[in-house]
Image 1 (cartoon, rainbow, N blue to C red):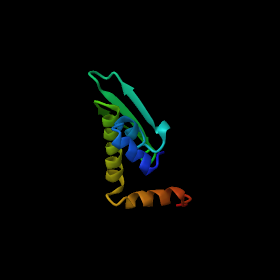
Image 2 (cartoon, helix red, strand yellow):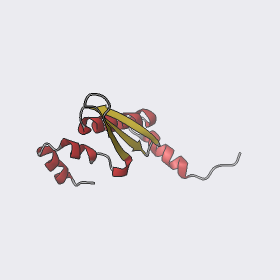
Image 3 (cartoon, rainbow, N blue to C red):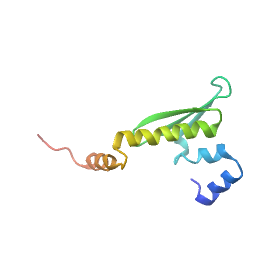
Amino acid sequence: SLDGETFEGLLEAADLDTAARHLVAQPPALSLEDGLGKHLVKATIHCSVLNRRIHGIGESVAKAVLDAWATCLLSVRTEFGADLSGLNRAQRQSREPPQSP
């Protein structure tokens, strides 16, 4: 993970592919695949919150990662609500011991 200043430096240097790779908190959670037709890249992010893989496609690594990253954020929002209050409830419930009937 990069600090904000280093990330901004990547953006200023127009190293968008490297900057996009660092949007994913855990590098092993990101996989990239190229050769999908004319100059297309597929990015796959493992979303630990949803426990599923999210895909994005773009004409560059940066565009594919941003597509997957945005799709992941929108999926989390759809699943848990705009304010993510459902996420907090789900996390609390997963830590509570099961109740007997």
